[in-house]
Image 1 (cartoon, protein in one colour):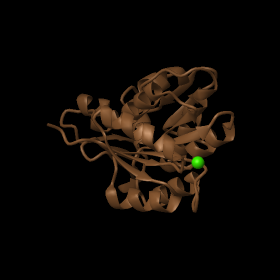
Image 2 (cartoon, rainbow, N blue to C red):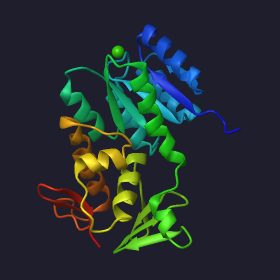
Image 3 (cartoon, protein in one colour):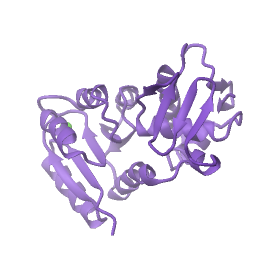
Image 4 (cartoon, rainbow, N blue to C red):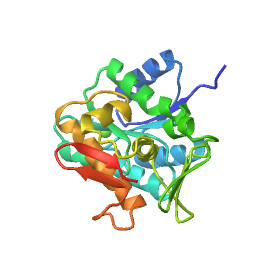
Length: 236
Ligand code: CA
């Protein structure tokens, strides 16, 4: 039997933590709890959870600072931000500092479970590049190389630190070179669920972050290109 996946919940509202833990455990997850940002960061680094549900407004250290600190220490654990409804800026800021996804409060348990599953599950999935490469090893375009066994991306031989979602977006686009994908298609294929309306902004932010990491000149990208009005594609 596969070991249980562990979800760390960083949230100062005890009633939310209780109901989330109860539902996650019922779905077969192990859970860890933290009630302030400092403890959340400490548990994230010490206990190595498979995913973090991270509230924004927290005592001692807010969720954004926790996420930023994780990414700065090269911890690429999937992070799902819990935001209050209507706070659009929270969503975008969360993604810009390296969160993988967000869910707005109040959320249904069904939605939460789906989100957790979508963000954890893909860690264990074979990359599309692995299936197309003869030996699953290095796939190169220009100075960019991907090792689908180790999930590492290199530019000119240097390792580039990507979050799980950035890695998945890159490998998905790169495994279908020169094919243009609309944002809504990328939400389905890479984020694993359909989104509508303003949530497509998630794709734009992730593309921008990815460009900042893999492109020599992010303002004039050579790998991840925009086809205006249509979507994004990986150029060879
Ligand atoms: Ca809170």
